Amino acid sequence: MKKKAIIDTSFWIHLVKINLEKNFLELYDVILPKKVEEEILFCNSFKLMIYKPKDIKIYEKLKYENKIKVVDPKIIPKELSSQISKNSGELFAISLAKENDVIVFIDNGRPHTFCKKNKIKTGTIIDFLIYLKEEKKINISDIKEKINIIKESLSKKHLKDIKKYINL
Amino acid sequence: MKNMKKEYKNDKLKVKTLRLKDTSINLIYNIAKEKNLTESEYIRSLIEKDISKYRLKKAIEEYKKKKVNISEGAEMAGLSYREFLEKLEENRVPLNMDGLPISYGLKSIKRSLKD
Image (tube, rainbow over all chains, first blue to last red; front, side, top):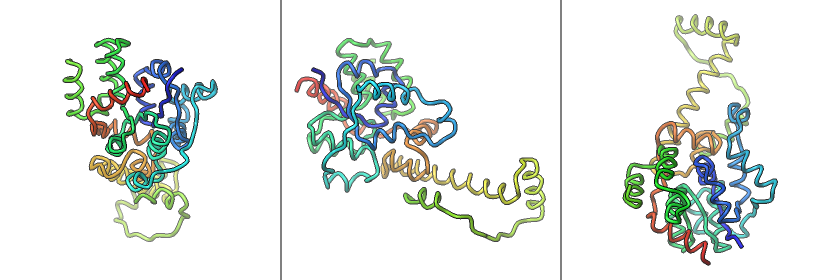
């Protein structure tokens, strides 16, 4: 039986951008709160309405096939709501992860400290990439190529850490 | 600033008087005509464009200072989550993803698949 994982918007967008959604779905059953779904699907610009992003198309397909479930947390921890905006998907994603003792994938660092403090399992797109490399599901040239796609979203320090970690 | 988007959307048009130089008035007349807009539509579009630019700049600054997350930044800028994410990328602003060491994330993934 597959394990469950909760995703946040930025993680999903990056995952599809680097074409790793299939690898992710092989390992995990994906759950996300309603707010994250809204963030994924909401496009208010004309350009995005016409050229629907690939990750939205894939999301809609997977949702239709019941491969993605939308679940909201029962409780939002007070400590968390004082740190993160009430209107953000992260708040719901982390609350759901805490409630169900499930990993949460978030590509935005601010809530990571909360996750660590509360022993919530958490990862980013980079952690997932490195995991796949360690498991030999992807090779070193794949990892280079994929990091190159999202390099604008990575700080110099982070890039240096990644290179050091995987001996690039 | 965070509530700006909502307020701005619900705003009705009101009258605001402003003084302009003669040359500007002539230019506004000619440009508006060329763009097939009324002068007031053209001036409004200029102001709105600059306000959007200002809001985005502010939101990016706050994101860089780690004072807001992507959702909050998007709200401040009056954009959707993915539009703000795109703007961060366009402006080469890295995501605050390096808060935790890679080892913590890797350990989490391994534990999540084992548990």
